[in-house]
Picture 1 (cartoon, rainbow, N blue to C red):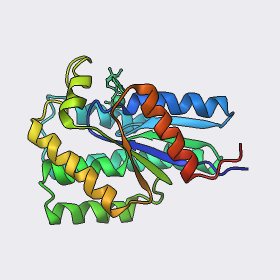
Picture 2 (picture 1 turned 120 degrees about the vertical axis):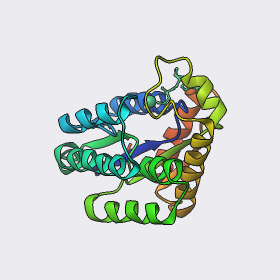
Picture 3 (picture 1 turned 180 degrees about the horizontal axis):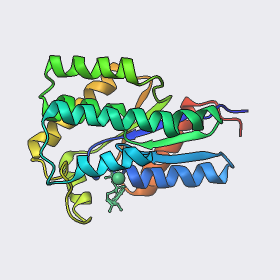
Length: 212
Ligand SMILES: Nc1ncnc2c1ncn2[C@@H]1O[C@H](COP(=O)(O)OP(=O)(O)O)[C@@H](O)[C@H]1O
Ligand SMILES: [Mg+2]
């Protein structure tokens, strides 16, 4: 039987992560694959409470504290939800994971500062016992993602950042992709949602030996 896969989706605001995950989950269900769908920050009860704090525009927080809260949320999420699900041979489909931390906290907040990237690497090494098997980086020009996201409701604390911030975040995803080019698959997020969904599904089938 196919081992449960741990799959994350990454990318800047509005690129279509939620939409692509909808599509993937539909396909998994059609193939009777047992999965849990989750997100970061969040996913567990405590993680979701930390998410509220992290996304609230009124939260005043320094970069280190933001980083540590992200990892606190992630640690709880891993131990409460992700690891038990994988242990039970379920697939885990996660909306954002460690690459978002590198991109947002490491590049967006800290301009790719080497000391910050080292802190993040150390936190991953110490507190993230399991990495995704496969990560889809949905790549789209920032302006196009903003245009898509603009159709939604009020902006959260991250969405309110300036364009230059998101350009750095995008550079962060590109750098992660260059470094981990096997785990992280770049998906062209342009075109309609069905085309993007098809690209994700094809890439999954190429990467994972599915027995159907
Ligand atoms: N391929 C696409 N083409 C056009 N619009 C899209 C596409 N994918 C998603 N959208 C729309 O763009 C907005 C942002 O998509 P969403 O999936 O919420 O992005 P994310 O989760 O990455 O922020 C939504 O209104 C969604 O319906
Ligand atoms: Mg989303």
